[in-house]
Amino acid sequence: MIKLGFQPLESERLIVPPLPGPAEAARALGGSIVRSPEVLERELTSDERAIYRDLSSSPVAQHILLRRGGRKCYLVATPIHRKGLPFAEIQYIGDRDFFWENRILAHAALVRSTRAVGLFVDRRFAAGHRTPLAMRWPAPRLYRPTRKEITAEMIDGLYSEMMGLRW
Image (cartoon, rainbow, N blue to C red):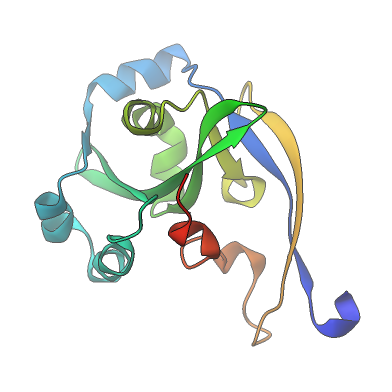
């Protein structure tokens, strides 16, 4: 496949359970979750507002803004099922550091809308972050960059076929 220009995108995903550590649980109490289209339009950065507008008509995309201590993290997730269990697959993370510090807020937001028992997150999005209790799920995938400067870390699932599928 390398001869055709394809590069490894990911080898596995993490399945992250909604089990916070004591510090994370305490931080979550000071955070909030926003799903309102009006608030998303007003508070997202211009680039993220463009993403929201592009995907707001998707039948499966879940748009969430996590807030805590003056910081924000925009997430886009889609519901998936594995072995008969519902999960939320994270397609986009606006602020990865914020997400991993406050991921229990994402769990709280997505359990209501998708009944997710856990989050599926590409392992490359967890680089440099501890993921206690996360299980690894094999997910080998390839991508074909159109320019040499495009790296796997720059690729997310926002404009994939997943955004148009109904579950």
